[in-house]
Image (cartoon, rainbow, N blue to C red; front, side):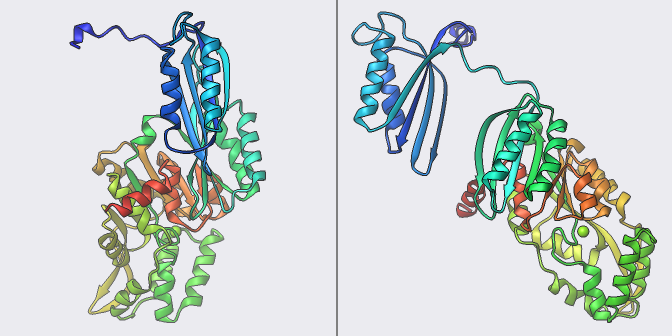
Length: 414
Ligand SMILES: [Mg+2]
């Protein structure tokens, strides 16, 4: 067909065109979908919509089709004949069939669309009920629900329309905290598919350790370092003061300790899967750390990261001097680096994802398009867009709408 022969685009159905909703339920086996449409084809109906799911071997197939015009079909009959034929086909396969007459297409979805991802470990029926009720309380409608993952957590995504993303966040965040599940609300649309830069904190986020504590153990000053950390947490010292105070305690340490500390660092479970999957999807991935380049550079190399920035321990004549060199990466520095990385990557800030656990990460989490508090302190959890409280970093993939099956299929076909 040449371009001039293509008819003008029109919707298959107007609001008052008679339509039939055909629902088939029963034991799944090959050929059901082909069989149903083969049966319908005899009546020259058009397909308006199809939805099909298979849950534990049972198929639910819904087909919305135009009602047949009188005189259509093999026997010249119409809707009554179609109903009888579909029912007898279904009975022959031991399937249940229901056919509901109506008019037009699906009701248009409300404006304001979001994806609500729920991570449970386990996901209890009580939690599912409370989340669904909370969504309804915002005026939102649940259009679709599907499972993203069954491992290492049960992850389910609700496609919601008719409520503002912010309204959903504000209702669901306290509900999630009370239920002990993680809920992320992300606006639907192209932007979600286009997120292209993920920036992570390092200590207690990408890795399970606090690097300064690993150094302190070698220097035999764990208690002193911990005391400074506690004072900083009480707000008696800002980050820069506490960094200088703690690094000073490492002065005189042999530089060979750097290599020892690198070997002691333990990646967070799921860290490799997260980075590998993001890289396959074409994301750029970076880390920013209030820790040290001596460790983050090694992580960048090991994981194939695009960006890494941290503080640098000064080493002179094979010894740590107890000082850091260059500009300090602190709370404001982390947010600044996120912006810099985004600019270098050519990614708008709205399409970035930041992940972190500490108060130091808050500016970065709030500057990003999606800020994820990862097993964070309550103050961080409450201020971030979303929180993950299970100790698996790859669960962040589910917040981006990536399913476990997709991750595993990519690993198998490498
Ligand atoms: Mg941290």
